[in-house]
Image (cartoon, rainbow, N blue to C red; front, side, top):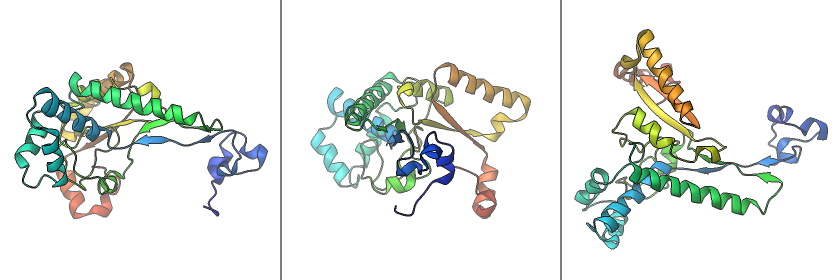
Length: 248
């Protein structure tokens, strides 16, 4: 607002010192505004369920599915389970869902660049992300055809839908690397979780290093890794202030 300034960022951004202006007051040569897609995995899975059940198999009509979503799945639990179990999911190395993701992001990137032409002085990098806001974002989103209830959290960043990554981290990486990561200059973090028991000792460190090397070799954009175990989570529930750095 009127009184908000960014002295550190301005000092590190070209032109601001020379112009003696803050970065958000026209000091930089270009202004940068990220266009960030949120809940992308949910959207991919939702579209995959529609394509599979409504159009490919004709197992349900679109009107019935819309009624189920309007009712927040109340009275339609069988249909909700079909959407979860029978439709392919992003991050499981399944081309059916991954191709939808590529088309979805391709359209998002193309539309962003089209509208950005009206503002030559501003750079609009595309991104996929939620940071830590995926719970609050979900509170504003109604039920979706991936089986998600209204107001439930959306998938964080570009991680798989919650509980939908059933084929392991290598499958998640392969699906993720099929997406147009080179065009997501604002970042698109793939969040992965590992049990600490699987990464103990030097052998565990080597396995994790190899996984990261493969991610880079396949053209991965950004990856975040959480390593924890059940006992640590239990301790965090008892003493949350001592585990503020733990991300779940």
